[in-house]
Length: 185
Image (cartoon, rainbow, N blue to C red; front, side, top):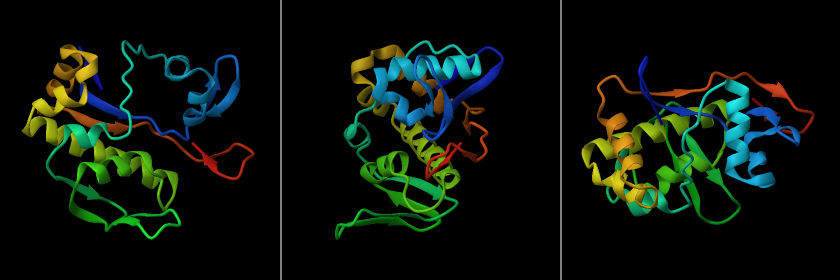
């Protein structure tokens, strides 16, 4: 979440499959870098790669969206979302507009699902648009979501959600081969 003097308020989605240099460890996907030394190292890797300043890091544990967003929200998916984890419970949404619970909204953020990494990035952007919409409709959602972070973090999210010119952007990426069996970005 970003607010700057020369750009619109925004949420930038950085894909977890982004291949970058992790200080002291070499090249890894962003999501893999969390296991080395936690979120601070990931923040440093992003800072080094893009030359941006990260003032604060906020981790949202699994279930935090469900605790904060108590109503259904609208998502508009460009491609269908489908997860089959081998159990009898399949999670899926068709392409287009749907009403979803906070649990399913969280799945859109953290579950790769069927499809390629580019579809996942788009789903994550859609999920953040829905989160911002929920915060704009009920600013107390930000307080519940960021309760442990203090009022200034919640105020930042409310400001971005309520701004007419706010945007949700994804980091421009392209496929890369990291020598493994999955596509890196």
